[in-house]
Amino acid sequence: MEHFADKYDLVLSALPSAPALHPADDELITASCGGDQAAFAQLFERYRRLVTRQACRFFHRREQVEEIIQESFTDAYFALGSYQGGRERSFAAWLSRITVRICYDELKRERRRTAHFVNQVSEEEEAYLSARIRDESPASRIENAVVARDLVGKLLARLNPADRLVLTLLNVEDLSVAEIADLTGWSASKVKMRAHRARAALRRALNKLL
Image (tube, rainbow, N blue to C red; front, side, top):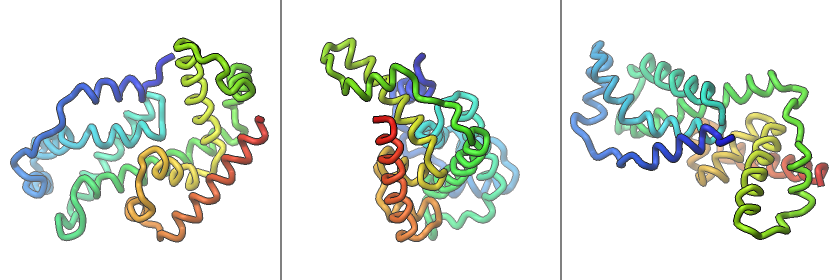
């Protein structure tokens, strides 16, 4: 079954990139703080794509992604009064920090719900690990890619939520340690420590399967 994240990426990639629109973000934020719902609706349309992409990096179920989007913009709306504008960070960066925090909270809730790791590795995934894609036919490569993607998701689910967050931002989002520290509010040394721990835990989980 096609993952919702993949389907959503196809839809989003077909959309034109948002041009530099007017009024500027700060004007819309000021109007939103004054109760102008139409102004906040413009912010939502302008940055919905950004929030959706970030949510899809961590979650594949449609309802989870939609919940992250809704919670991110709800929290942003009620925190608009604390936004410092260009003096602190762009609105996109500020909103990204909110979204990452919400994704982290959901990862922790998901970890508690699946404490016994119900997503066991399937026979197909075990075969994939053993064969290491021996068949190089196009159809086989596609099938193996799907299996590998699902397997990575299951392996990531075994990680501590903080380690999983850092590893995803580092390797999937291709962010730097400094950028991750800014998004999470953690120190750079903590991010590096989490990344090291995450890679080691991922190797241990993979070695058990192999």
